[in-house]
Length: 279
Length: 252
Image 1 (tube, helix red, strand yellow):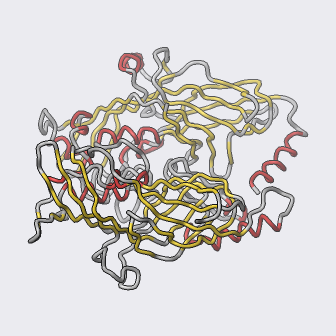
Image 2 (image 1 turned 90 degrees about the vertical axis):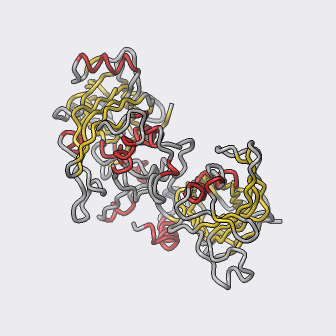
């Protein structure tokens, strides 16, 4: 039936597909990245074991933004850019002009390392950091629970393309209006970094296990949780029912787990979804 | 749409599609057998233990099949068409609508395999499966081979240092295993679904040295807070432990 409806939609649009319009892609870290991820209170969304997370930096390398359909590509971003979505947003990623005015049901983008990336809204030093280390994602911040504060500064080299993006109520892709402009937001969900399951829709945000890793690492409990310390925590040391991997293979440590979660940071128009594909 | 509408919802969708004849593909009612078997272990596990399995049993059922694909699952928002809202957590598995189910529960000897039953189903694009491993009853496990647990494996583990552990591993899961991959566009062709339990995945992360409770016969069980029990449960919960395939042709 979906195909049937899309078919009707296409028929309707074919009659007015002459002309062109503009599509502007933006990116936004939402309140969870710009302000904080709160501790869950009274069953509301938040970190369930009492931690509050604040980011001081949240860098992503965005590139390969593409608009098209099954048959053709209407627009492609040619230059990857580094954004700090901790800064107030949304900010413009790319504007495509003179795009044929019609429905384009394939929208995709990548969060991937790029040695030629340039600054989006990130500082020059941060752009250099991402390129020098081959990072696609880097975040630093603090997590606080009562009197305890843990610092973290984690960089990841994951290469993920987000395909077939679709938003609730808006459908797949984007419809370019004739002589008009449509804005499409690539939304970065920073809270996903703290989920305790890689697949379950019942995943909860936690930080206890990540904080405890600071006690297990080579440097000891120095207040900073490093990726090396996370790598020292085998998931079988953690409580049953937490940090399940679903069908994601080769995830054995907390570092593996958080790394896998970075492949779910990219979203579409707020709560919309894309299909992440590891490269 | 609540996923627990299950087959009723799916059949409703099928009926809606048929009512809109000519507007796209139509779903048809059908059945297919679902069988359960296992893949033997070869080689050492991740902790260096080579395992010989003597017995392996599983309490299994109901089994349900959904349209949503595992990990990349998305659903078309049918409910929004009639003014409702349907939310799936972005980036995480969402089963979507149910397409088939077997409601029976059976104790399966995994070393010989068994047919669980016939699935009541509709044709369509399948994406994933949900597997329930309930605690058995005296009816479903009359011989008591599972000792009240959802799964049980007995055998011997040996490592390169010469240690030998005879073990009796049992686990209960508090909820069904969701999001097992099964991608198949299913029409009315004859065939059956085969669920192959990969015992190597079940036991793959267990350090048998942490099994510290031998019985009078020297058989070790896994303490509840041991690495062995934790790894066992994670292995059983791992959706990649279940290889779900479509076997063409009539059932043997």
